[in-house]
Amino acid sequence: MKIKLIIGEKEELIEISENKTVKNLLDIVDIASETVVVKKNDCIVIDEELVEDGDLIEIIQVIYGG
Amino acid sequence: MNSCDKCGNPNIIIKKKQSGQKLCKDCFIKSTQNKVLKDIHKYGLLEKGDKVLLGLSGGKDSVMLLDILNSLKKRNIIDLIAVTIDEGICGYREEGIEIAARNAKKLGVEHRVVAFKEYFGMTLDDIISKNNVKEGRRNACTYCGVFRRWIFNRVARDEGATKIATGHNLDDETQSIVMNYLEGNIQNLTRIGVKSETRSNKFTVKIKPLREIPEKEIALYVVARELDVHFAGCPYASESFRAEVGSFIKEMSKEHPTIMYSTLRGFDKMKPVLKKEFSQESIVGVCENCGEPTGARLCKACTFFKDWETD
Image (spheres, rainbow over the protein chains, first blue to last red):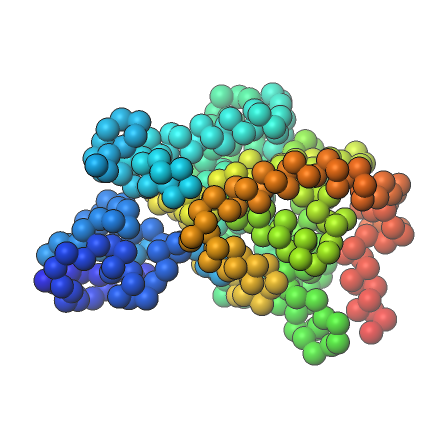
């Protein structure tokens, strides 16, 4: 399935397999979930949220450094 | 079933690892505001009529604190002035200043920008490049911390502020406890707390209303409230011992989500004993160079300048 992924200024269409959660997606793009807030279709979601075909996922980096 | 523990809304935005509590956006915002206001009351951080100087960097912590303190200003409980320090960090600070100004303007809060250059004749970038190659050079955070405290104290007096409020959060405070312990700085440990105990009326009392709120929840609060925030890391922060300690605590927190709370609670219980045994009750006079309060002949800021003159 395809989703639109926004990380900062970068926006891309990516292909991922079914039944992936936000946490799985963060692992795929190698971003620590402790450092970000994630929005799905413009609503804040938790790590366990399922990502579905056509979703717009925005990863907002909120914590930098130590 | 994932639904809000308070109202049953199925759209939750947080599942707290430390307590298991699940909250929707509205209940999370409300409960976070209530927690901060409760802590302000519990620890006696503010009194009716206080004039509060808020250190407003434009980052998430200070913008959240502005949002909450403004609710007390609107109820005529306190007076509020926001002060942004321009340390002179090229390519980083400019955006934070603009964001801080926009936030203050939006709420109708008086705002001042004060610069290292204006008070010390040089920026933090100048200070670091000047000291880059010398033996015994301290990291940027040490200089920045000393000069920032000096400015806040001076401006607070000029403005007639009765309290200085900063956005230090649970992560910051836990880092301070662990790093000072690891370095054996017991004197510094005796000074860590939610409210400073002033030894001189020339020092304005400092308060930390967000001390028990984890950094991640502050970030979630500002995104949920759609506040205008400067999300960027200081270019000097990564070189600090604090950053190393912070990474270590964050890593530990993944498997032990209550570790920051227990570190803080344990420390607060020990603090009276530490103070009794190790606090040095120096007589506070004034720096013979700048007139700021100090227990020595020269304050820390002037000591740095004197060292640079003699190098």
